[in-house]
Length: 109
Image (cartoon, rainbow, N blue to C red):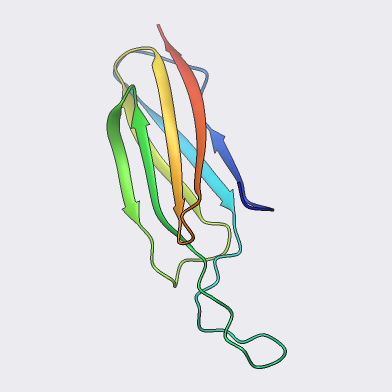
């Protein structure tokens, strides 16, 4: 994992079957667009999270393509319906080939 890149995820620990829950994610990342220059006038290479996905028990919940205009430390909030107990897997893909993952379990009553 690249230095300083840290995913954070908030998922309720429990839910009712079929309930829509709110999921919040944030990843600490500088998100360089490739259009800024450093102090010497050289272009700073593009380095962004270009894709974010979330799965629940192996099924796709969300798949987002990100563009250079996205802000530093991208934050996502979305809802998902949980029909059963299981595990969410969150994945962020970086331009440089790095992949960052986080998992969260949820129990359904």
